[in-house]
Picture 1 (cartoon, rainbow, N blue to C red):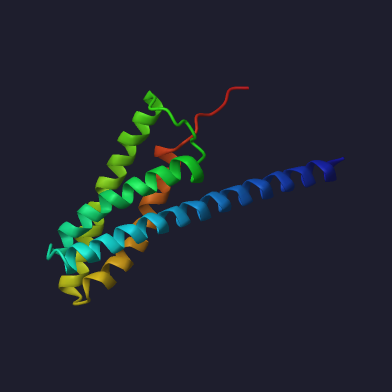
Picture 2: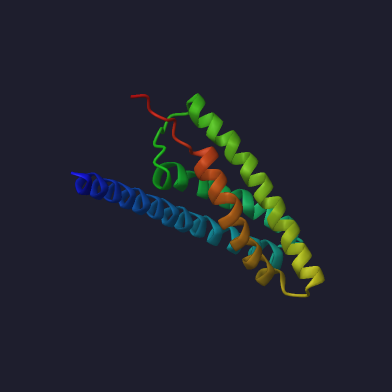
Amino acid sequence: MPTNVTSGKKSSLLRKLIKQLLTFSKAQLSAFSGGMFDYLIMILLTEFADIHYTYSIVISGIIGAYINFKVNKVWTFNSKDYTYTSSTKMQICKFAVVVLNSVLMKAAGTYFITTYIKTDYYISRLFVDGFVSLVFNYNLQKYWVFRKAKKCD
C-alpha cells in the first residue's frame, strides 16, 4: 500500500511541475510577443522620430505592456473574465504598477549600461529586458497580478 501512495504523490508532483513549466513557457512567449512590438516601436521612435531612447522605451513599453496584459490575462494565466469587473480593474491596477516599475528599470538600466559600459542602446536594452522579464515581471504577474483565489473545499 505505501507504494501506491508514494507513486500517487510522485505523479501529482510531476503534473504540478509540468503545469508550472507550461505556465512559465507561455509567460515567456507572451513577454516575447509584447517585447517584440515594444522593441520595434522603440527603434522606430528613436531612429526615425528622433526621440531619445529613454523616452522611446517609456512610450514603447506602454504599448508592449498592453499587448502583454491581454495575452497574459486570457492565455497564460487563464484569467478569462472578459467583462470589466472589479477583479479586472484590480488586475489592471496591479499590472500598471508592475509595468511602471518595469519600464523605469528598463529605461534606467539601458541608460546606465549604454552610458557607462559604452554599448549601443539596442544591445543594452536586450540585456536589461531579459533580466527584468525573468526576475521581476514574471514573478509579480504570476503571484500578484493574475493570482487565482484559493478554492475552499
